[in-house]
Length: 301
Image (cartoon, rainbow, N blue to C red):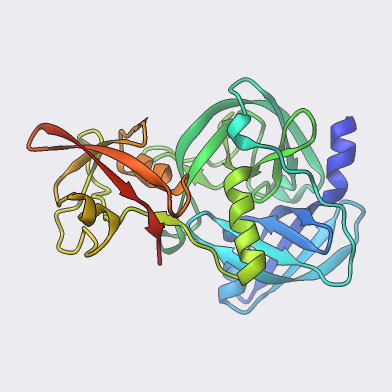
């Protein structure tokens, strides 16, 4: 109860309206001078269709918000309300989160503002896709929790037992084509706050953000175990990190910087969990033979 009392004043409901209707979600204050973090998929339709975004606090006050920047690959967006001094939530360290840790999800599921649900960290490093369209799909190296997360929780904070934010809840998530989450079934997912914080800081500073790439396109239909570099022309970026390291079309990547890769999605989230400029070791098979290369990740465009 004490944690909820501290956190709730800094959590907002978001109404994003446009000519085609609207979307609702959640967000939370990340800086006292009016910056609010949420999911891109909460506000994307309003942004692309010239709509309006309104944030409502737990005390009932509401304000118009402007978009500072959004990042589709990580499904994040930063809003701002002007001329208001707010109380920002404290950031935790998502790298130190352990399976079994207690967590609390805060937000506005199904429009019910100020809702608090309790759970634990069920797993880490889940390869999850989020977003509401193929064009705006995001790949997330997610924290999994059994705290109830429903539509409307998107963009709200997942906090630890001290009230520090360790993740950004994302209710609209899938684990491949065979799994679909339509409501709380004990499988909720959150974007780790360490990644969200870096992206938010870039958006606030420049209105844009970057994400790392290794310079290959993978075959999303490959089911043989690992991630296969596509056989389509141009699937290995000319002059990119992978080409410089010697990767070729048809190579099957089975390990990325010490992390076992079992699917194309897992490779994408593994890459995006790193920073631009990181040097990583990639293990792959070619004609059944195992090989290893080292490459340096560059910024995607």
